Amino acid sequence: MAPKKTHDVTDTQGAAEALRAALDGGGIVLPSPSLRIDPASPGLQLVELGRVRADVAVRLARALQSGTRA
Image (cartoon, rainbow, N blue to C red; front, top):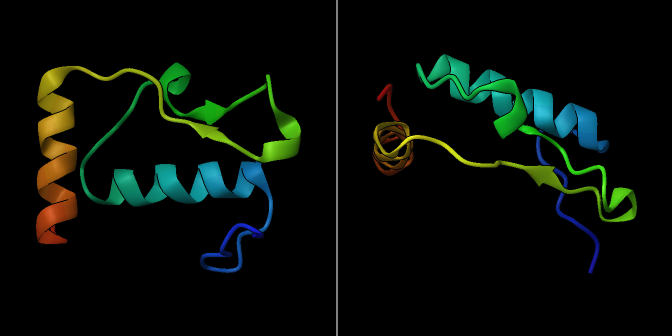
């Protein structure tokens, strides 16, 4: 099954940038190494989320649950 297109993003770089912008808009800033294109599997078009501190994970979870700024 082909990956679902979201907001007309069809490339991995665009997807990563869209995610970063959405997170920034929610007041959540991930360090650059934590949000990047996975270089090991370019054919799969994976965006790597990496590791974050526990407080950032909680803020991200709250933002996703509420749909508002964390």
